[in-house]
Length: 184
Image (cartoon, rainbow, N blue to C red):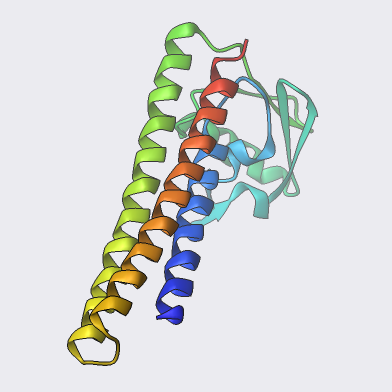
């Protein structure tokens, strides 16, 4: 039973890590290098993440600079940024590609809050799926007579407490992200 609980806790932790990763992709009006992490460049026929063919820096709170190591990659990186879901326009001066991050409009902020809430809900669903799997494993142990009915109920209560704590953590992360997005 302890193994089931440990496995469930580990998998719930991974759901929160995935939520953090999703949140790092949401644009909040501040520049950070993780905004471009998911952008893939078609570099000589091979899909390559920007971080593997250029250095990404954040010199100011509203600017990201990308400096490809290969001069031939400049137009490819620009095209990938334009085609991405960021909705930002890169400026190329031959040495650096600059991305200026404009202030978010109220409407865009509300859209981002909706996306953040959807990500939180997805994380909660993943956490609840882990709970369901753990409860099924407990019931299998009970059916196989490896544990008593009382132990099974106790284990399911522990899984529920674990689930509640992780759902609460996801809510807290969601509220923090919402406050960050709505901050002017």
